Image 1 (spheres, one colour):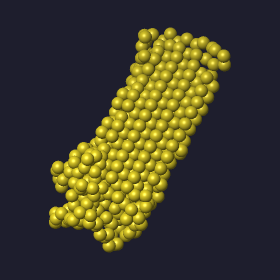
Image 2: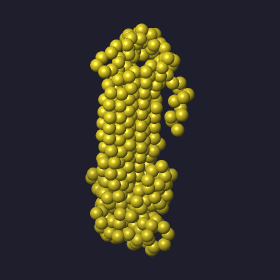
Image 3: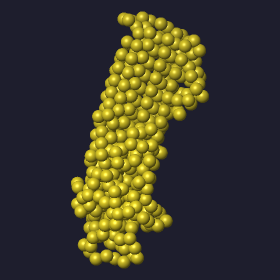
Image 4: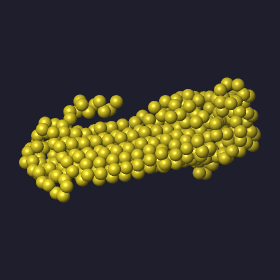
Amino acid sequence: MFAPCSGWGLGRLRLSQLRVGAGRAAGSWACRAGSAREYGSGGDQRHPGSEPTVSRPGLARQALKEWALLVSPFGRLRARLPCHLAVRPLDPLSYPDGDRVLVAVRSAEGGARGLAGLQVKYDEALKEVTIVSDTIDPQASVEVNAPLKFDLNIKSSGSGCVKVQNIECDNCKIETEQGTGILQSVKSQKLHVQTKGGKVICLGTVYGNINIHASDKSTVTIDKLQGSTVNISTEDGLLEAKYLYTESSFLSSAAGDITLGSVHGNITLHSNMGNITVDSSSGCLKASTHLGAIDVYVSQLGKVELKSHEGSILVKVASSLQARLELSGKEVDVNSEVHVQEMAEAHKDDGVIITGLMNQASKHEKWIKADAPKGTINFRSQSWFQSLKLQD
């Protein structure tokens, strides 16, 4: 479904290399970092400044270094890495107080370059765990088990990929270059994701006020977003979402297509050169494209305004919908199955304008406007059952 990310096995979203239990991440030793306490496998405190030994090569993806940092709750993780990073919550049974951050470095080759330059520390005053390296092997992976509620500020360089799973934040910021950013079941008051050439993938339900920006040919693929405000933009890549439940959303693309499943709330869509498809809209919808086509099914009406400067528009509506219609295009085709009263036709320039009231709606009812000055507008009814095939 998705192209694999180099060196990390992301084909079909398979990140088996990064699956590690919280107990394993603690390892048989820990390294003092900042004011964090150190613990061995028997719970003995290590001497300040001591360093963990590198594990012998053998098993694939075995830990090369591990840390167990004693932290205050509601802290923050700051990471700057050129390799892969996975963040997930601690095991609540093993750590009921949620006062540890467990860090493990792994490599499939049994060794990795640049481990000496990896800094892992905790600043008690700032309540911040820092993981930083410019020299670590890009094929290595860093795995972090953090308290369930922990802010994130992560930046990966090169092809380094980031996966965040089941974490709750006040603030979550993730930036990648060519690597893939994956968020799975994340809750954040403020969520900012940016990639300069990789992919952004949201799995499960992602909650919060969300900003996602994907440059170049980067794509954004979403299962479900739920929150107050959502802003998503791509440049030359596909923007695809199955479900949007938001109060206000703005989605845009310079040249890519925008393909949405079921959307709820006030939704604004814009693409300069791409097509726009909405399988089911419930609420207010405004969609515009310069060169592309628009294909929309309106299940429950708010106010709908559609415009394609040079393309065509297909509007499908629930047969019982009550709406005031204003359809303007080079050609306009209203299917005979749609019940439109007071239909009027006017010609202007090289186009035609059709107005009317659907299902005896009053003139003050909510409306559907569609404008395709150089294209064709097709307006027809579609049942809710027929729309289900679009949700595969």
